[in-house]
Length: 203
Image (tube, rainbow, N blue to C red):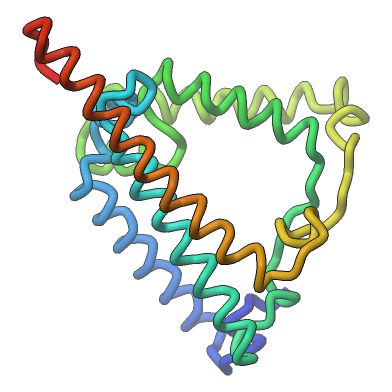
């Protein structure tokens, strides 16, 4: 199957794979420079001390969303050509919960664990090993819960389609939500850090 850039911009498959590799290295470099290769920085969000993870990732989501819809609007990259997984709401909510538990217990998410491995973090190596074992375990046990895993199927659905509004409404709504979220977590950070400082604890 051709990838989106091949379908819409005349890139060869080799050129697109090289571009993906360069972008991937760049993304990993930015994550490391942002402190995402350190478990302490990543788990601080769960204690209200440091929301850099949310800020960086939410900003990345916003940039990607605006870019995708802009490219669709000008006809360079129609959204219909993007490969999207089918939405199975219940199983994916459970999967998201398990990912969150793994995040707070292990200190990394899958992407940041690879960044930490590249920068020589021993705990990240064990974390990636756990991911591998989890993937193997999922594959081995899958027949036992395959039916449940396919429940709640909504097909290929985008957020604005799910809520029954146009993308012209949903995109600004997500941006406004992000601005509000950034303001809210900034207040939480200040209150938590002030409390820690008052108790003589390093924020």
